[in-house]
Length: 447
Ligand SMILES: [Zn+2]
Image (cartoon, rainbow, N blue to C red):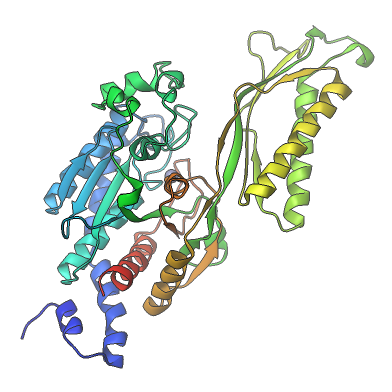
């Protein structure tokens, strides 16, 4: 009989042969997706190459819209059921039976301005590849499978996290639609979403395209956004947790503008107060890491006021944004209390006032232990080297975890970090990560 390799394996009795051959059949089938993977990335490059360098797929704008159309086209070319929800998320579904729960494999299709091609976009592709391979090998999942292209993950555009996934899960606060404005256009999120074909009124009235109760799991494959896997010479990482954060997008330090000749004792210098704050936060970070508590502190914007600043002016106004993240809720709370103590001290020392502006936050997202263990087993079976690691970055997976959906993430080695044009991922490494995903889906849902 000339059955596909999967049927041959399934129809055998349980022997060591079966255990030996299952991983190699999957690995080979996933490696055969090399051309499919490069064609997908090439199609995205063609619509999102920024004349100023890198890749730009603007959130709820022409760039992201075009990426979702490409995913929709590919879903149909592959013969999967295409859906687009009222928040603009795109789904390629493999319905295996009525009433079954769904495993969603997804990530975002937007990018930061002048970013890289793989950040986000690798996730839905991994889902598509896993579904293509399982279908081709004759696997019979007892859940429905779905690759999801998610909207609006990059918070640089609307300064809000996980817009597309939270809108789908019904967890995005309803005032966000009018309160959030895109940083470059000044138009509201609602306005941008309507232009991209979304039904904002239905979302505001409580419509929820993705019911968490109907989801068996959410899995995300993403490039690593730091060089830990490069450093350890491993192609794949398995996520333990996604950091929670507190953020101040628009904080200001108010001092008094003065003449450059003003003696030190008369100055209230907002720039030096900002320098004190940055150094104090860096010291806090360094001490916490030395004590075994990983975290990160980022002043993404840090500048004097361009309406007043100049060579001969003591700065009386300073602007900054702050993102502080950690992997444990209790630890994050402690760091935030320390941050406020530092603010109070600097206000007294420098005689300035610090207006933090609006506070935003996201909870810590713990990866599901059974999924982590399943990924590790799959990687060992496939002979793919891996390490377990906390995610350096925030991901939609945290929004699913917060909605009570078991979550797992696979990271792929990336040579030069992300959020810039030099981001680099080897397709072979991506296919290793996709093989771990595919083998896990087979082990967990097709036996
Ligand atoms: Zn990303």
